[in-house]
Length: 289
Image 1: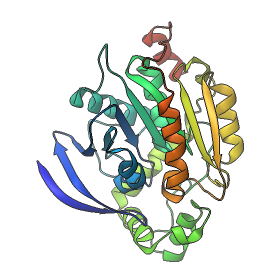
Image 2: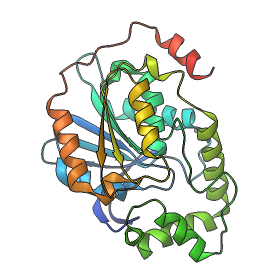
Image 3: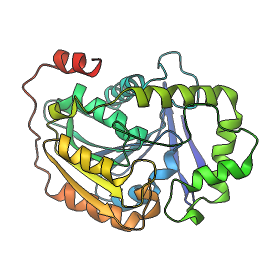
Image 4: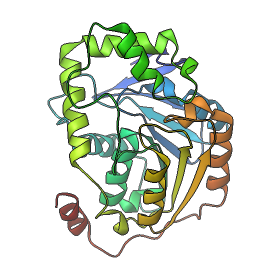
């Protein structure tokens, strides 16, 4: 089922064909090597507008809507549950086989999901790009219910995401307010936030052999720069880039600089990434330890 939709979740307006197939909704554009983009806890498809515009002429860009806000009996509200959903989407779209891999790019909670997916399915991931990823430490809307009727409170919390508070447009604040005022969505968001905070990845990251690019806002208040340095220390094959005057969502706030780093990283990524020798079952066990 295809339909023309307009997604408002930031200062961007993403207008593109949004496809619904089986249990999945996603944006798809372009041909070439696949870029699979994962949004964060309060994110949406439109968060990736700048990346989509930059890479749709050279890459196959896919942006699935993650089951964060709507109840899905098949997906438990946990980071591992969302990673399982991503794996089902990869299988549905036939993105990976013995000869083909894809690049996984995640922001905030989407980065956390990307880390888990890359550890569980290293044979599928060509390279990994993380920006403002959770998985080690993060602050944010908290693990209790936000004030559902207080517009100023919500606006202040959304503005906290960015270096420039003006990036918190009315459209973005209204979208977050609508999510919070939906009780079922708020409950699911809180469960996911708590699950993400409980699932610290520090002990597992040494097993991540996928080539990784870390792109961080130097003024990120939610996953501060020291978190990026810790990811760099723990992930064996990683490189770290900072963007000045930039907060938690670099691809939204500083798209030109962000895309330049991504393109430079992709241009030198080897055709095939090394696959860890440890069996998948061992990695799976370590994620639950």
